Length: 551
Image 1 (cartoon, rainbow, N blue to C red):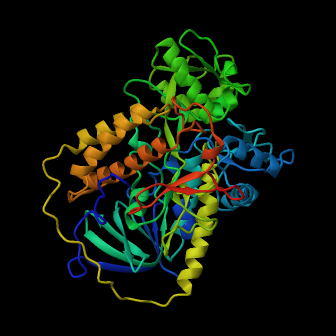
Image 2: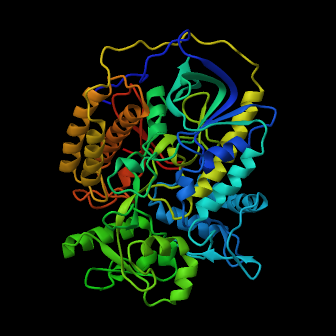
């Protein structure tokens, strides 16, 4: 990137005679729904090593509340789901990708049921919800508002029964290993063994998103953009980094975790009201509370500015209270901890960073631009979501692309012979250590800056200030060699943050989740992707399939 300090290729020193080695057939980085679904697609004759930064039960997939979108109702049509996805994506979806994923959804849902997932049902049929941007009731859900937890329970049990799968929990992936222009595995670290070089025939990246770059976020602590930074340093292409989706309704109570309040609550009939109790969404969109997330987030932000109030409110008091409490037991419990009755009281909410739409560019089978590396899930830019993800298409994407890239990695690994040769890779020990920095202070400052300048609403002036500040932090943080995950995670966050700032600066229009107050309308010439690659001095324009080359 022109004018930027180019950080080191590897974050820590290592050498083939100083670090232990491990060999596997397929290496999966990430233990959410995309990573585990990929592992389950690998031929049982192959050894699969699954690396997770935390425990398997701590992932964004686990936190998913709403459900999985799919056409399972005879009254619904594939064309309807496709049209809803394309509409939400604001002109940047790949229609062929959308069509394929939507058509695959019923089979993936049926597969989960066969694996023991207990989706909510009524009178022997799946109970289907409706969320913002959907024209029909098509969201399968579980445990009311805890779909992710139930899906991950079933998938983890399925994966645990596979003899060829080995799990390394509490293990941090520091960097991808590359040799002769291809990915050969990864350098990982845990408290028990320190650094280990894990060599693999094929590597699958499924590390999730980057919501923790923002002060207000629905994501668990580990979603710090690590996989995007790994791929960036290894030379893979990233795109659409300006598109961070903000969920409109995040619980906003002092002292409370920023819990997402599922979109299904609005699908069930909840109203959004301002501090005076006035319902406001109908003035912004004919779909009112069921408008897509980008529309609702911007509306809430405008109302907060207008009323000089820190939040708006969800009001369910006009709905049957018993139905509300039984349909959303998890949210009712969380609100109850703060003296609020979900069914009776107004619930304070405001937008929060939720889902990273951009990421590592992949093709329709999950291949990245770096040979030997595949990717699936939130870490990727697949072409499904465009400029704004349709609700409940995320778990679906993880399942579809996890299955695809697992199958591709399996077939390619089977065609390769065992090569227990270690390339002559090494990275020297640097002179600058990580000592003497208050990492928590830099991290908190970065998250505040991103929320303030690269949040729901952006401007050229604020982005320029953010770029200057992030670049200054990069210059003295990236060259340092840290000895534990706290430092490596901060370095990853800085790498990803400056990519996001650069991309948001470059896209001089408003489209989907990217709102520029100084460029308030979408423009035809920006109906394209913006891609980035290490060692390239400028953005790489990418046309959409079937679109004319931009001028």
